Length: 177
Image 1 (spheres, helix red, strand yellow):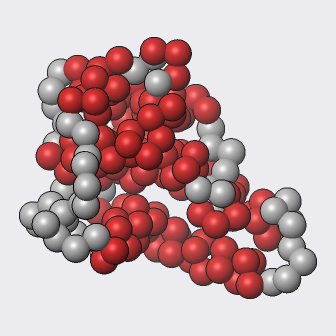
Image 2 (image 1 turned 180 degrees about the vertical axis):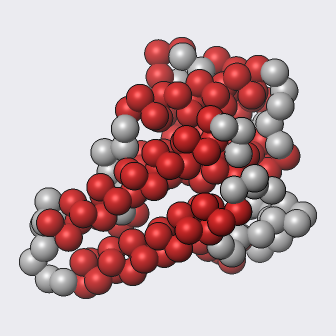
């Protein structure tokens, strides 16, 4: 698990609060995606992402998973639905380089190793940015997801921010095989 459980719990709580704010903003009629309510949520998620990346660079595997999820989610869902927009490109690149390095040295934990090919299935274009992440792409292509998803043994979704909520919704929609 994490060396920073209190910090991760705090970040997950902040994500939950932002999701509540996002739902309230989406319920208001007439708001544009550029409304201050949305801009505030986007800015707060960018800070959360940056904090996850900092922890990931220190070796925190859980923070790495959450940061990677937020990056992927940003490119796969509209910002007004997911609350994530305008992440720091340098932080995104650093994280992808870290993941690429972990793939190259075969040091991914089982959970992230399972998640990455799913992300690739949905948004392969994001990982193929000018060939910068060859080990990551090779890992994803070598372990493609097919058909329905089975929840990995021991997978916990509670208290993991949007990443946990997302996976929980996927597993509910996809019966265990």
